[in-house]
Image 1 (cartoon, rainbow, N blue to C red):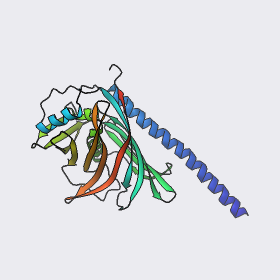
Image 2 (cartoon, helix red, strand yellow; image 1 turned 180 degrees about the vertical axis):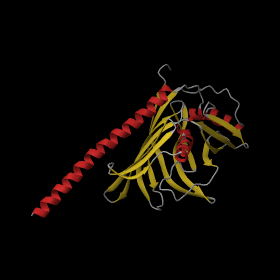
Image 3 (cartoon, rainbow, N blue to C red; image 1 turned 90 degrees about the vertical axis):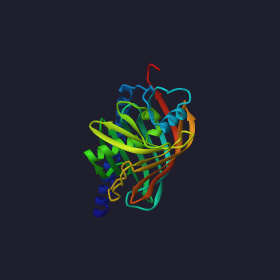
Image 4 (tube, rainbow, N blue to C red; image 1 turned 135 degrees about the vertical axis):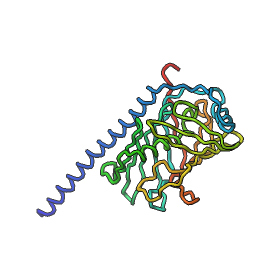
Length: 279
């Protein structure tokens, strides 16, 4: 009887601790989303398409902004699909949401995905003021992966902001953070610079002006305990939303040795924009 009583007390203690940690985690997630919001609305946005860009980029900007460039300060996106954890082959149903800043490199991503029957994890990547924080927690409470900021991961997070940019296409207008270089009539190199770091990807843009995919210029390390940005993102199912052509289907993949390894295959389920207050 004493053993059963002790076990019950231990179980209750773990449950109470988990409940407290769950609330703490979700308070932290809300705070990260708020920090991205604050960075976004404070940014010095200039969405004037005045710089000369390569021909495929001209097509993309004309297609994406058919009636001028909306003064979007922040984008909030909901997603669902199938996700594959690092070093695993099986996919699991996943829901996620992001807060995304077009005018300055900043984003917050959080996702819930099952690990085992009855066991799920909350994972998040926060990239704010040039630094990232990446964690995964069982039941949103117990930390199972914690990657502190490093120059390498900060650069990967800058590339992540670049890779997600078709969802907030103002980010791809030339600015203090973005420049384009010509390659050919369907490809151009886009380079993001922020806080002393750079990240680049090759954009493929079809003849209609749709950005078909972004691809990194170097192989990824498939042995890391995180996917990071991935090295490849395909976009499709473009729809007109709030004056912008936004892709609603995506496949994001790692890439090494000539092979793509998809890990996030899904669709946009919600899309909300916030304009600058004076627009």
